[in-house]
Image (cartoon, rainbow, N blue to C red; front, side, top):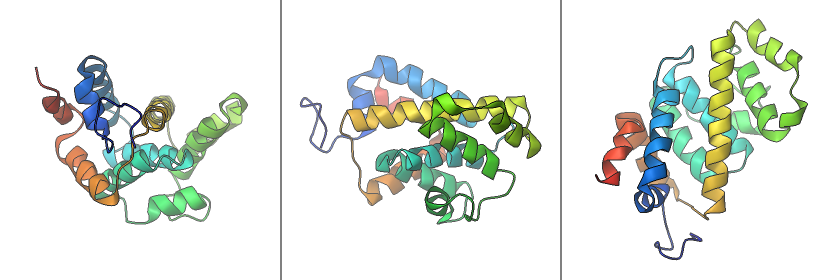
Length: 181
């Protein structure tokens, strides 16, 4: 149930964006740049990082939507749930495991990050651009998880499916059309 009493009890993030379009436009533009722009990571991998961070944070709303989005881009069903439960044994590509481990540690204990954590990402074959992008996706979804949880936004599985598929089809820029002029 949303804590914003001027909005319906079952408020979605899109409804919050519609109620506050100024910040939403900037936020959606940042999402579009980071998650759909040029990156060493595929769109599926970036959505996977987003869903993983959201799962680590127990943000069901974002984890559900971004899991569907990642799966729409080719991540096999069940991989993200397995990764959140136990990354080491999850069927995640070996090259991506150090990236998710990095994002998980940055989410859980940001002040404990070390050069060795970054070196593990580099040793897996990623470059500095990749580390930068992984950190930004992680930071963005820590922000989004706190926004969603702080506003009391929830969604059922049907909404997560609809929203995740909409993100896969139209990207984040496509959501801006719902904000009006």
